[in-house]
Image (cartoon, rainbow, N blue to C red; front, side, top):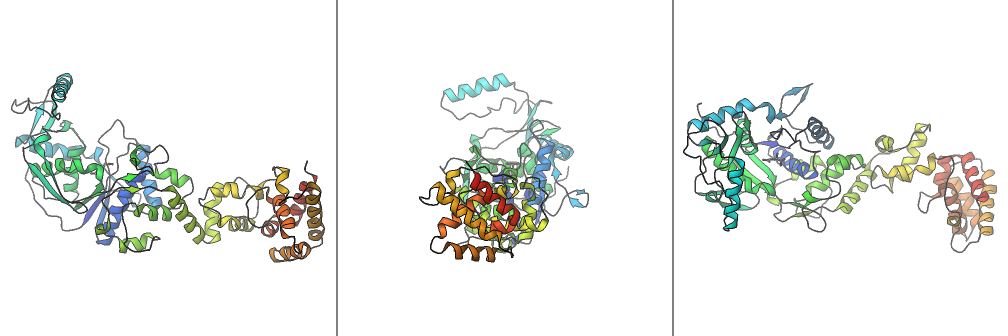
Length: 471
Ligand code: GLU
């Protein structure tokens, strides 16, 4: 086929996840950096599902990737039409395109068929290793003119150099690589080949990906040269590390975006947290909206050293974003984390408002609000005692609360607070603590008058009575 060397006129980036699992937080961060760079430069993005590994790729993972990217607000702006939205390109649907380019390389003798069998290759590999050599294919089939088998690229013995936008010049020796396999057969291109062809066909200008891909870049450059494609710009992002500095890819805990989504993290918080895993604005500012980042982001401020994933920081940020929500908006977000109930909408809003300041995750509402929704509370009687109060003193305090509140007409926080304060005088703890425990059954909760208003007079008095009767 005719070669067309075209320098892309536009800044174009790709989001290239492999659907071999749920969208990984590391991939989401990479996609975020691609997204931000494209936005900042007025460029375009595509979503490309890299499913050449047909055995490990699953449709449900493709859907998960799409859903979580939408949830994060990381949209792309080109792709096949799926119901009025841009869908992803899928490598599994591009076999014919790869075939054309494989045929081109075979015709030009830049690639060849190899039919060495697996045992032979393994024996040679072990022999090389035992002699202290780095294993590489010895080129047995290079000049055999085979007509079937796997397809290998004829790799020249030379230095490959590229300038990484984050790390500067990176050099490697292609002589150590050996002739790499680029397709299982003519209709089954492998990852390296598919990526290079797609980046060209999709007119990608910049590749921003994880540091773990640095070793792949020389292979991709050699393939581009063999195919006559123009050079691309590369930027390799720092690795994400666990708190103990081990690789995040080996993390035992949550690694999927959907784990965070389901646990009640907000997309705004996750975006803000992820961008700081490698990008440093160079100022004191830490809180950024996606819109702000679209203007502020720059590759120059991406660090080379590994970025530690600190869950406490994510929790802190999430709490901050939760507190910024309006009560009606937060109530909607909390709905799926509350058990079934038949409380009026306004009461639910009040419950959520009373928990808002304590929430780190949306899912925290389940526990923070459970006592509002339960009929009977279950807690240790000893909890009712403030300081060294004995059982009699606790009962007296509760009886006093009952007496005062029974006569109260205006059932509102301020009024409840006022009458109790008056009655308690100097001994606020002795009144407010047992009262709050009677209403919540918890060591920590919103203040008692707030809970009492939400519960309503009848339930409040009932809970005081339950506390008095408690064994
Ligand atoms: N599909 C690859 C991955 O999920 C990304 C490849 C690339 O960025 O070139 O790691």
